[in-house]
Structures are given as structure tokens and as C-alpha cells.
Length: 400
Image 1: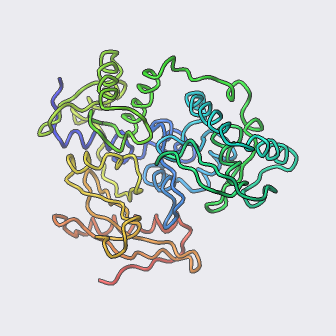
Image 2: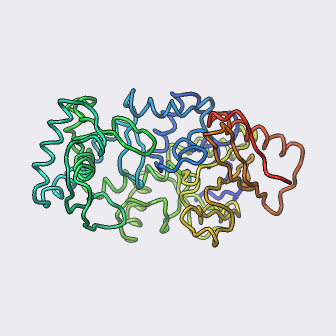
């Protein structure tokens, strides 16, 4: 088994992620390429200085704008927002792999009395009138319902009938999200945008084990290196410890992943076999390591396994958005700061849409990081870029 240093492991992951050296992903096409490499990126509707998916792209894709992602999703239809790692965005060509999800959703929907009639009403209305939201679909009242795709378990409660019907048809694959206005979703019929061959395609994986392997490959590729341990990187994949270990063994036996030993870390780590040339570049010191400063999204694929980040980088990060204010160590929506090959701190910034101003509430540098002129310049440029990304004309910095 190949032995590599922690520094080499860090460099490999950062180059794989497109966060070190010259930008590998450029413009709208680069955004599409990155999602295909990652398999999926997480979607979260909270917008403080950009939504999670937008910030994930902004840190990697040169020239990326929020409009690029919107077009890829709702105009070009090259990307789909659907369940995967919780709510996620992934390539359209992966639609067949989630056929079993949609089939289970349809079977689940049939357990609710009266839901089929409401679905027929909704489909007929949308076909006649076009995209709707839960506020514009003329279905009144409430029903007892829960989504089969809810990741915290099945539960049933009384909910708005229009919203419930739309969400059921969406998880069934009958509807797609047509567009979003803020956090409000507008739905339209999937057959207006996807041909029947794609809509009716069955999962290419012949059995559950093959599908599990496919999903695990995507997650390993999204992070770069992963270990055979429990991890939030596997979130959304239902598997036992034994199933995960068996899948790792099979993937390695098939030559689809390679094991490496990182010095100082117990047990092997794994990368995609197709990424071995990149690792060899890192080991030969021929890889581009030109430093950049990037602010990472809270649910960035780089941070999917926070224990891994802590082990390789010595950097502890917790997203405190759901932590009571009095118990937060840093802030509500804080972004890790990556500079070159190191995490150097974190930043809390919020876009004031009313005043077109990016308000930088605080910057915390790691204890061993010195405020050099080069660091200060990189920070200034990165903050200006974040302001432009949020269409902010002014910047308010924290008092010294």
C-alpha cells in the first residue's frame, strides 16, 4: 500500500477539489463540470451571503455567478435539484439511478386516502395553466401526510393540502422544480422538460449492492479521500457498518478505488482509481500549488467529513446556524477561510440587500496565523469578490 504524508494528502484533496493552483473550473460550463465531478452538492435555502450551493461554486469556479446555477437548473436543465445528500443538486444524466427512490415514493403516496384525486387535480391544473407554487395551486384545506424522502424519519402530521400534493408529485418524479423565488418553489410537469426515455429509465444498477457502490464512489470522488468509517459524507445513504465495509472491499477488488496509507492516521484511506494520476503528480511535486484564498460554504464537500478535516488539517469547524445564540463560539453563518494549503481562519459576513452592502461582522484567524501583508491583501481581495458575488457595492469591515 502506498504511503503518503499528511501534506501530500492535503495537497491532493485541494487539487481534486479545484481549490489550489490556477482555476480548473471556469464560467457556467465549469460549474457544470464541477457538479459532475462531485456527483452532488448540497442545497440549503438559507441566504446570508449566498446560498450553500452558490458559495460552493463561487469558491471553485472562476467567473461564477448565481445566474449560472439558476440557468443550469431551470433553463438548460443540465442539473436537477432532488434528494441525495439531503436536498442536493446533481447532473441530469443521474436521473435513472434514482428510479427506485421515485418508485418508493409513488408506492408511499398510495397509502394516503384521497391523495390520488388531489394529484389528478394538480396535474390537470398545471398542464392547463403552467407552473405553480403551493400558494397558487387552487387546492384548499389540509391533509394528513408526510414525505417518504424526509431524512429524519417517517412522520405524519396535518399539512397544507396544496403543498403536500406538490411535494408528493415532486418526489414521485412527476413534477420538477420550474424555478425558485427566494425559498419558494414553483413546480411544472417533468414531461415538459425530460423525454420519456429519461423519465421512464430504470436504475442501471442491477441490485442494491451495485447501487450502494455507485453512491459510495460518488461520495469518495466528491471529497477526494475518504476512510472506511462512519461519516457525514455518507449522509442519505442507508447502510450498515457491515454493508459499508463490504462495499469498500468489493470496490477495491474491482480496481475502482485505491487504498493509501497516510502517515500518522490509523487505517487506510481511499481514492478513486481514476484519480491516481493526480496523486502521482502531487507525489512528484509537479502539481500546481499556487495559493488562493477561498471562503468555503458551510456544507461544502470539503467539509463533509469534519473529523477528516480535523485529522488532516488540525482545523475544527462546526456550523452553528442551529446552535442557540448564547452557545455559539463564533456566529450564525460563518465560513472557513482556506489560504493556499491551510485553513487560516473563519469569516462571518452578511449581504445587506437594502443598502447593497456586504457587512463583515467578524474575522477570526487561527492562533498560529500571522497577519502578513500578503495575507491581508488576499483577504481584502477575497472580501471584495464576495461583495461583487452578492451584488454589493459597499463593504463594511469590523472595527479593529
